[in-house]
Length: 130
Image (cartoon, rainbow, N blue to C red; front, side):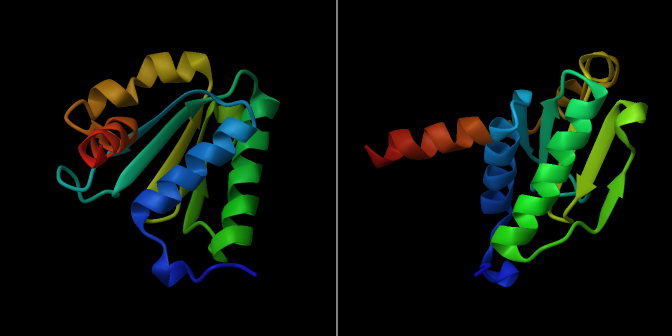
């Protein structure tokens, strides 16, 4: 039975999207915490697919698994695999799935360079728990 989407935090949703992308063999997965620096979204999850069908498969799996776990559908999905960039907008979490060429061209991590990486935040939390 799906969990209540009202109880899921932005961080939990971002973590789930990362795990789903990993399960579909997405590459170079990064999550940027934007809460303190932007009104656009709380987190960006950015990952690379190695072919146009791979982009579509990653996007479809993320939409399906988030719906199954949290009974949540994206607010919007923009782009398609032919555009080399698919964005899945869950409101508080936006997932960007790009080809290597598009990722190099748009450099989202550099554009949002002030954002902390979710991976760094988790590591900080683990080290403070020790």
